[in-house]
Every structure is written in C-alpha cells, then in structure tokens.
Image 1 (tube, helix red, strand yellow):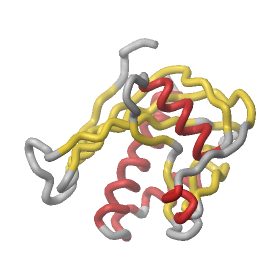
Image 2 (spheres, helix red, strand yellow):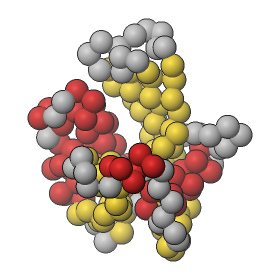
Image 3 (spheres, rainbow, N blue to C red):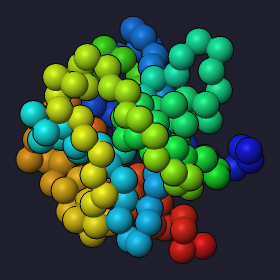
Length: 164
C-alpha cells in the first residue's frame, strides 16, 4: 500500500511533550451512496468512524479490517491510507491512521465489554449529517470535543482527497 498520505497534528489543552504513552490505531472510512459508516454509542450519544488500537504483530491494514469487522459486522478491504492524525492529549499521543475502505460484505459483530456497555451500533449516516454532527465539536466536553474535531477534520480531508 502506498505511503503517500498527509499527516496532521491536533493539540488538546494540557498535552505533555513527550507524551506519557502512545496509542496507535487504524480507522476505516467506508462511503456508499453518500452515506458513511459510523459507530454510534447509543448510551453516550457519541459517533465515530470504526477503528481502534493496533495489536501486537498486526499491520495497520489488518487492524483496520479487524476493528471494522468487530465494531460494525462489516467485512472491509482497505484500499489506501489517506491520512494520519497525531492527537496530543494530556495523558497520551493518539496516532490515528485513516484508510479508505471498500465494503465486501457482512459478518458477525464482536463487541468488547466496554463497547457493549456503551451500546455500540453501526449506522450509515448521510455525509452532510456526519459533517454537521462532528462540526459541533466545540459544544462538547474536552475529550469528546477532541474526538469530534478529529473526525470533522477527517471527513473534510476525505472529501478533499476524493475530489482529486
């Protein structure tokens, strides 16, 4: 997979430099009929793109496939990485690697205990509605505001990237 992607940095108020820990993640962007696949935490109301932390001996592409499968019950194939966001937060540097993915089919969803507690459910959201949801990032508490700013940036970068 080509290494030709943009890297952005986002800073949260009281970040530490260097960070106490680094969490590397892969996230997938799947768009069909102008609807994007998001995970919706029904018990918290939070939306985000499907994805999560890199496991030992796993490539970013493998992580992306696994996380989309587990969180949404969708089989997907990463087509290309288009963005990396380094999100500097008080306790951690989150390195989120975003892949444009193709939906291949459906499978069984396999949520973690935390995801079950949060009521994680896959939802196809109209792209304009998703941008509106994430665009209100300033209205949320710091941790959600940072996540929504990241997702807002990603969706706008995705639209910019796919117009090329």
